[in-house]
Image (cartoon, rainbow, N blue to C red; front, side, top):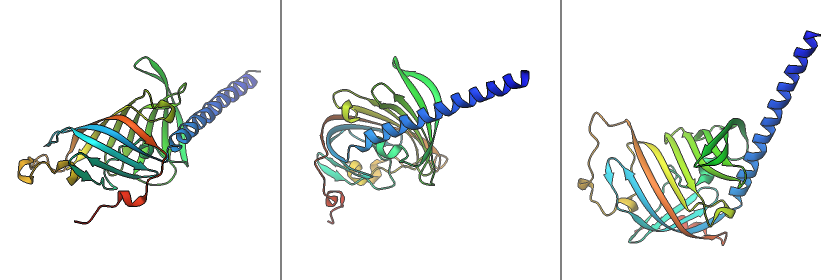
Length: 236
């Protein structure tokens, strides 16, 4: 009798775990689908970059995005093409695409909003090693992500939504970065000559440094189509 009860208990636990796994997979799939519905956008932004070893003025301009990974910042007073290996400033590229193992990591709370925490491990080897996502299940929005990458350390992102939330596009994003001898694109730093930028101290060279990027999205033009040559750096 006791053996039957134990078998029944284990079966019940396994059934609950399986159901949670299915729910976690479904939640991630729905979130990914909502994010992927935005194929391109042009956003008016202002951006503040806070990196310990360089001073950068507050930037204003246009941020162009085209799925899956094209991005360009056209700032007032200059143009910066963000290189492929730089920190990608969209949630699209900080979450694994389809083909990932999703683990339900339990419930949490962000600023009074109940969220479900998902751990997502890509099935194929790439720059993303692991992503943690804090999901507002009611609105189907990622309010926070923490992505461990092979080349760019750990990227933490906090997202605030408002008038663009139906498109899963944030009003404000704050990035917290681990950066190793990080170099900002030339178009961002063009206001400063090289000798004005403090060189890393010998004992600090090669070590991870902290960085923070704050982006305010003032408006979006979404899914109107953007030609690929918009993201091609013009030869001087």
